[in-house]
Image 1: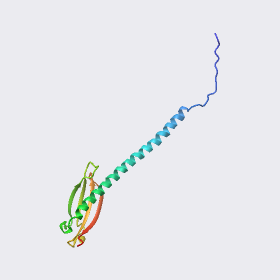
Image 2: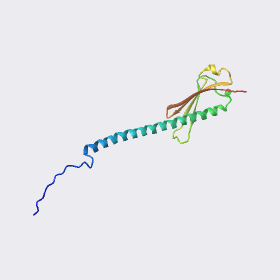
Image 3: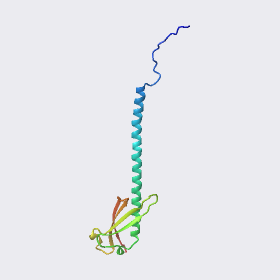
Image 4: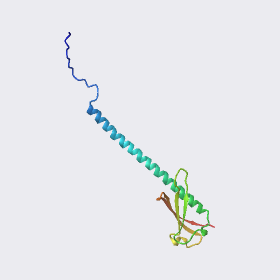
Length: 138
């Protein structure tokens, strides 16, 4: 029988210790959580911007339709309002456009002039508003 010699050698650092590996994974998870959080935030902002753009488009459509009307044919009573439902491509739900006429009666004293205010709602939330005065030039 051959006697076995036990040799003890110094540990050679040729890898990571368990503590180093856990620290690296913890750091990596913190960085990736913040990265994914910012991606979610950017996706929400992109959706909000798309909805706001659709609201502006819906409001512009209604104002363009009203612009073709003779101002005398539009309501002149203070507080008169008309509601429109406008579908925009790419949106499941239509935009609701509330049109208010002559909220400031001094802007409607002449029968060829009408003040118009619009509010555009998407799923019950106000997304855009505008105010203008229409008049007949000739």
